Length: 59
Ligand SMILES: [Zn+2]
Image (cartoon, rainbow, N blue to C red; front, side, top):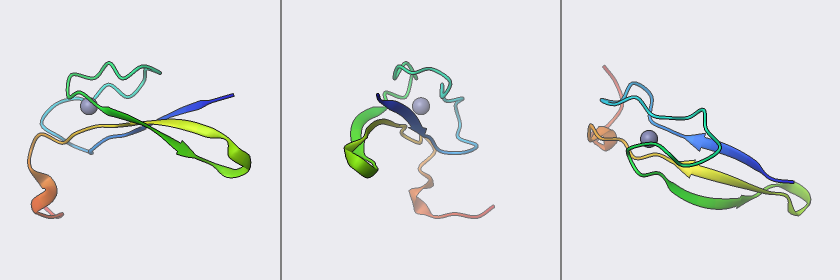
């Protein structure tokens, strides 16, 4: 059994599709397996922020 999680920036310039089990978001999420306890694998769709927020947090 697998689970799917989304890792998306909050309040980005675009609206990220985080409801689907598929990486259908327009930002082109990177899908990677993450291992949980007992060898369970979850798929993480890691979304890309488009506003350059890597400069730092805060408003
Ligand atoms: Zn996205």
